[in-house]
Length: 496
Image (cartoon, rainbow, N blue to C red; front, side, top):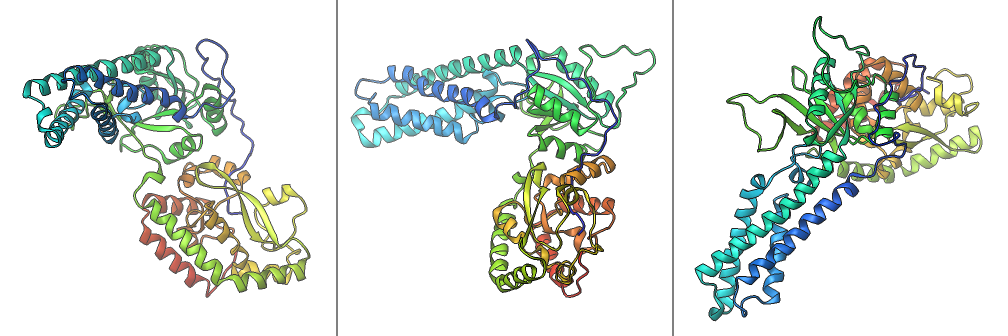
């Protein structure tokens, strides 16, 4: 049995990097609170500000016009319009969570346009329902002016409070990229605390010692540790409560996939920081920059179009295959029970999407001596303990059929990189730079590497290359093609 997972705890000789000190005390050891919990007070404050802002406008209306029903409708409509425009989402609360918080002028066009539409609609409806209560042009203008003024003042107060909180309690972040560029960005953020970001480490795996050009002064700010291993990054994320990673764009504009996969695995939001804005280039909205550097959120793979269709294909496909293969499953289970005794299913921990561990199911083809052998032995394809039944199941890949239940549960997909055991994931991640990037998508029952013959004891480097190519160019039709090619290979089984 060849392991097809990923994660090893092999030896690592490099000394763990020291962590940046926490402001105001010792480093935290607890996991950071969720982003939703951190954002909720600000979103709730903005909603409350919009609800209160309608009250001054009511003072401009005549007693008969300022009914409770009208005020309630105006308030609900204003909140709905602002929510529709994204004014309560993180990207609107601050151009991003990691800095560049908006000002009154940034929100003025969006707020003014929506409130103007709201009041024109309210005046038209009021005139249609009660012509004697129709709003005169002067009253309408006064109500609109009071409403927008109160909205901007109250929302501005919320934003000022957030900017003050960001400055007083900056968010810990990692800076990722080539050593000189990462060091410059970290120094810039240290010089400008108004962005609310405090770099706590530099992720430059291949460069543990950052050379300084001859005669160049070191960048201002504290010396930051260089995090060169997955263990260093994990310690930095947990102890500093890191939720954001700033990726300095390379010359081709794309961050290294092994960096992004590892940081996503630890729950970090990734922001790509590009080159300084130039004249004639496409301009970002006001506030959407870090001291002249454009940046954007790197959406996770699950946010890509078609992901729901992939999951639908998994559910339908796995369900149909489980029903169709039910007699085969029963025959295989009976054969294993009669040939090798009790314990028909073999359960093993594997690494899935974003490094999440899950229990993979297979028909047992042999009984390992202990848990360590199951977790660390690469191949048992020629083991003498294999019975005739076990050898047949492996050669025909029928031992993999229980994984259809993993697909139905959501642990895996029908198509994707094959999952590996944690021990080998760690080893291969140290040996191959892009290996960790395989975890950007759910693990699969079959994959592009497998239909090209990369099964069993074959090149890990080749598998890694095929898996990342599949992820980078994924389409639903590609999944269908791989499933059809997999069905064709079952006619001439090679096993694992």
